[in-house]
Image (cartoon, rainbow, N blue to C red; front, top):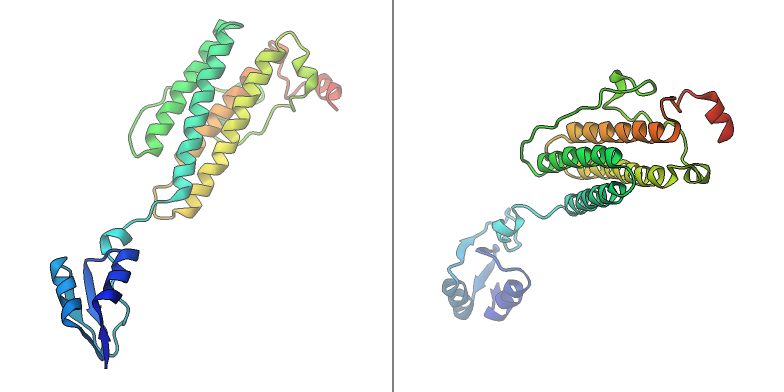
Amino acid sequence: MKFITEMELRNVYRLEPFTSYMVEHGSRLTPEARQFLTDRQITLSYGTQEQNQEPLPNPERQAKKPDWRRGKLRCQMQSVSALFLLTGQELLERDVLLAQKVLELSRQFSALQKREGGGTSTVDLSFQGCTGITADVLFEDAGDCFEVTEFHIQLEKGREIALLHRLRCALRELGFAMLEAAAGSPQEKPEEPIVAGINFMINELSSLICRTTGGGTCQRQNPLHTAINS
């Protein structure tokens, strides 16, 4: 017969406090060990030979462990939100109308943040597509209209193009982080509506970059532009 001492219980309790304890089959508590459990109002039970012989952990501590992917995702969303504000602030000094468009997108992103946190919100989707990004792919990954290179930063609106492209890249990275968090937490709510909203904002930014680069000409369908950047 095995005797469970107070010291053994103290060591287990120090590593992880528990609210219930099962004495395994063939074991007994010393009087001091029993008093240790009584003083802490720990529920005592006795197991049979077929039952698990390990002490029962605290069910409250095991109820729900924090999901590091979800925490990382929310930090990334905060960083993108700050980038929206920073981009809008910098564009205010260069192109007020473009800055207003970015700040509108910032409000849309804030609404997505609330949805990810479990809240509800409405999003004003004013962008209806353009020549290169049609209405049927607004909420899908339509890809970039063209690759932004050092050629574009030499244009008159080069700084604006670079700022919009940086924001678009941050959103695209966030979309993959959202899918990663969803894959690691299958019990959580589906992320498809939020990813669709991110795709929508990426596509609107692509349209803004296109217009900033080529005025009224669709750069996605412009063969001359493709030749310049090939």
